[in-house]
Image (cartoon, rainbow, N blue to C red):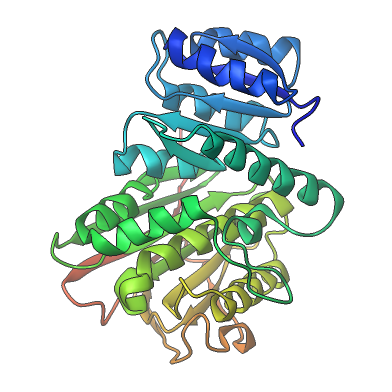
Length: 354
């Protein structure tokens, strides 16, 4: 099943690297190895593998820096991280960089590596030949029937259910930069969240054509399944970004896919959410509330965005609320989220006068 597959191993531990490489060669793989991230990047420039196995603890550049660079230069290359750390912040970063699986050393059964590789390669092949995306395969949710989770993902989700502090650390590690700018528009957010409360999670992306798309999620509203639900939504959002369709129609399709997955998944629950699209060219903001209510304040004009349908309960049937941003700024403050102070600011920068 692995016959002829090209695998690049980037690992600073020569003994572990030899063990994995030897096993994969016995399985018929064509294996190359590199000891540092820089060597790994050079190897990728020379010849593209079918799969990359990478450690996180490496000299010269860190494993996280290496994985980030790979995600930018080779976004379609499937990556599996094998690391001796179970640090939730590291796991969160690898999720941000699109890593397909995360295995923790020591590996008691080397067949776990084979199983992970087969699963990731199957997803990669399916993604190239039909409309099944990585996120659906990762959580084993098909368009027609729910499939069982992989043992690796089930282990991670069960561990997060048993350790709420680790779950919170993971969600906080997924938060993006507090300030971002593209062209004349700037986004910033302020979050004052109690360590004893379930956090509000934000993610956003700027598209090359100008629009900016974001979402906010109240992890506590999904109960014990909050972390798993957010991880699944994030996976769908990443696929949506790759689709390059920052329109309202594209976002509604995303919401529909997420709702379908929530209904079919035993590890996800309906959740309070808010989606938005900034059309920088027309100075318009389209907002869709799915149970996460907000107050929008733009230079004295206050708009309340409210809806009782949670994401997962017919939120895709809701219409966007259109906001005029000709005034050049808006502050989105969440309400009814317990012991949390969370606001998102979108502002058009006034060009300096020389």
